[in-house]
Image 1 (cartoon, rainbow, N blue to C red):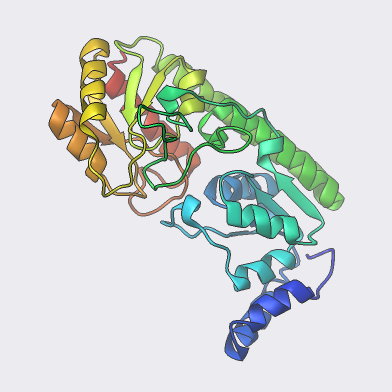
Image 2 (cartoon, rainbow, N blue to C red):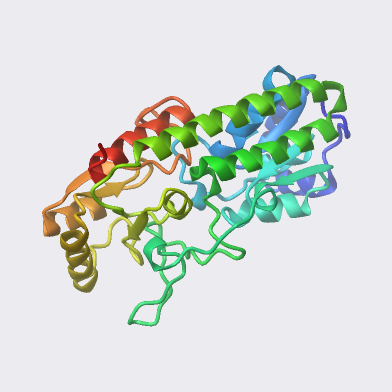
Length: 325
């Protein structure tokens, strides 16, 4: 659709030119192919792309900047993607999760910029979520990718709470209606359906976790603070480690004590990074390992084909780990 314009900006042309004439030709052809006759949306990563596809339906063409299997935190925007972004009708992103996306969107003249972080209240999560907390060495925690999780403005993992994700969906729906009024009625209807589905997912989590033996679960990636808060759980994250680093002796002892006191049975890891940290800790503490997927991307290894299927697989894993009946 590209209701704004069909000319690549000087910024994008400069960036593409830096890659050479061959790449420029490819980008030009891609830009032409992007003239889909639909409302073109560039989404930063899977949870944003999923919203755009469900809300936009047949009226949108959605492109994700983060490829399946790519860890979103590690994304660096390419010149080709910069050009693609600037030729789109809307950008849907989550400020604070991917700095290179934040910068590219900020510099882009694109008319409709939808920041999911502005559509719901972000919160800070404490020690149990491993976000920016300091330990005895005086260093702030990093997640298992080596990224500082002291995100400016709060924890960005809002999509893992179905209630907050629904709030974001409502905001995205209104933004689509405003930017593409010809299809506003369909956007409104699709948004209502998605919000209803997310409410049903929230109900499943509330019912499924109602009767449990423990509230505590252990993860390698401190992504589940919102989910834990929503359902009265406590996340204990293995912080300050990258996937190839062994847990410190002090942290292993701390988590071993927590496991004994709170009946923890499982150390969770995720699909997009190494399971080495989880297996090391589990071996040292006599615990099981299992997947708790932060749904940052869908791959062949995911336990489901979309957000809802993977979240329901997460619920099943949590029910087992927490001794839910």
